[in-house]
Length: 254
Length: 254
Image (cartoon, rainbow over all chains, first blue to last red; front, side, top):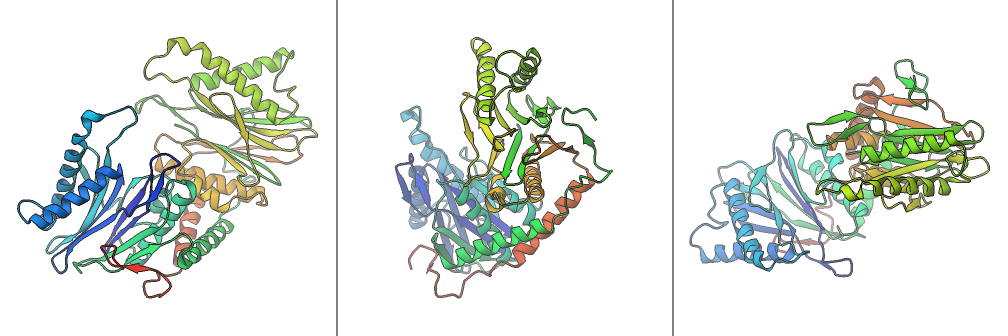
């Protein structure tokens, strides 16, 4: 399993991914799921991958090959992030088709991707590319995209993330969402990779690679746990004596 | 879909359930999934139901019939909560077997249950009964049980719930977990039913039925959202300039 997410705020983009891959519980490995393609000052594109590792590695290899060939459509020539998503979707479908005839009962070559970044003169944006090759963009209402094991980490994003958030707070939201997911699903695992993109910079900054025992991650967990406890302490008490709440007897009769 | 959960703390038990049932997106109804069986001063048992509504209703009817018949094993005679779980599992399997021969592709008669409470002289406890009829108890490490759409609401329980929690704070944790789930999955819906059991009381208190626009639920949501924002504000900033964190370039080279 995998958990990848990306958040789009006015200030830029946050990309985060776990690094665990597994084919059965006794075949667990560590692979980076975060890949970047950039021409500093002209374009910066980040690709997060989920699903069949052979498919996602083949797609990444093909993108690098196309860039090196320098002819036809490639990540260095796509005009905007929508075209980048279209391109990734086509490569993914082509790769999956190669294995369609070899399908066995438990074999699944499907993969999904988050592709985001910015190309000079265009807005920064993120897209989710489905296994079928179609894709959706983040919106004002939902300025984040997830793929893989997304449920555990979603409520915190729903409650906190909006486009006006600073890039730094967005990154902390991504880390809390990722850490909650790792804690709940053993097949989502460290290190967490985190990459920030500042709007209109057209180049990526440093990438953070946080191992499970990383000092900052431990600080973050402790502070978050304390913050949640504080938030619970401040919640209003149950209205057991308030008349405004409908109360019924144990059998449902009022 | 459904979301039911129960929390066991030293002070007692919390039971919470949503009330939405659906057979396809255009066939949505409201049914209570919380059923209580009690002989005040002797036993108090609460049953939360998830899965096929025909199966769960049949199980509840059979429990009431067995209690009225007053012969053989019934909820009024089980010696402890483990036997109550065994009994519910047997009724559920018997009901599912009735429909086994009628199976069509999309038909699924499976159901799961949370059964909890206390019988005089025994500890208060909660059990999760699987569709196969087997069951597990809550533990010191994991003092809560969930069934149905459980992922969205799990991280908050993992971070906050322990056996030393007060019953009131446990109830607030259950409501936040339930509200987060309703927000993320449209097939989990109001009203939320909430029932508290105080250890050794051997009787249930009043049951809260909270509609979506309930004043307390709105207060709770606002306070929770504010508390989370505060928790985020207090998180340590990203260690982009700290030497202790491993930093690598965008291509993975250090």
